Length: 303
Image (tube, rainbow, N blue to C red; front, side, top):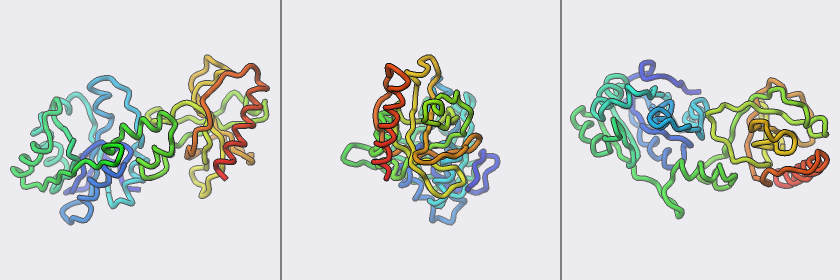
């Protein structure tokens, strides 16, 4: 796995791609590709953590890729390090020129910088690609501006991926990502009600910063983090309207045709298709009967 570090820990000098790169879709990969084959510095992706909107506007900004996931995705692209610039009010107050000189030149010794054509930086987003080109000329740093990629539905964007994922459309999500969306969770003790009604589930604790699909029942593939093979499973994501309407949202996975003690293990989940929305049933038996139908539907999708 490539290193994830702060600007002060980075290997220098750098050839860097600068941006959020959440989801690492084809547009992001196009920017990143521009700094891979140059021998001017360590191929580096520079991003911000937390997301600027969290600090500036108090918005909760869940990520398609957490830093550890992003580092795994960047390595095959030829990137050697992921630099996370700590975003805070002090950083937000820097002008575009101050950010360029202090972070990119002084701290990261950038020799080459690639950004998308919609990139903005500096206080009040005052800096744009034209600003970056002018600053690069003064510092003798090569600046590469990459056009925004579009398909027949519009420009490639993390927002489109987020929208598809929230609606539970994994086909569109994966097409836009160029790979299968996955998330990881640790199996923690639950109430055991699933086992009581004949459908034991692994209750997953997922990093609260990870963007999950919209609530519903899904056909998924699951595996332990150190396993090679995914197995078919069915997942309930969201509230538990029949068992405990007041309980917080949960992520529960039932492995199909397989019984194994997973408590304390890390599971990697690949949602494949949404089966249905959540529903409140009249009785626990009705719920159990529906889970049986969900499991049969999931198997038909996954096998």
